[in-house]
Length: 89
Image 1: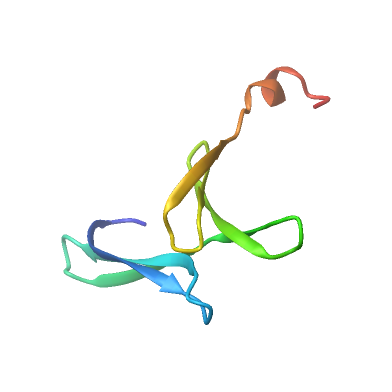
Image 2: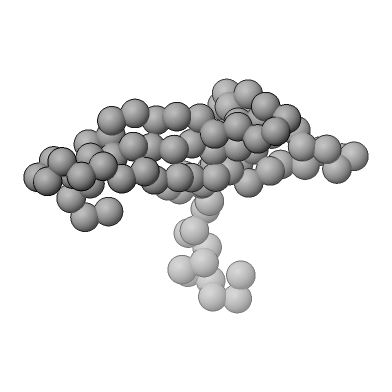
């Protein structure tokens, strides 16, 4: 992101059904005052019947599972230990 480090505000993004499907983070360059919008979208999580039951936000070391209203309801961790020590995995 370079010099963009100060977050001015973070807004939820909603789809036509009212589900929170991501967010927009407004960042400011402290040196020049330039403002940049960074958009992050979540991946839908489907239930057994194919309906959307939540969304997955990618995070460092795994992901955060959110309900359709954007509230955190769980997490998923990526365990990379075996990939480095056992190349056949």
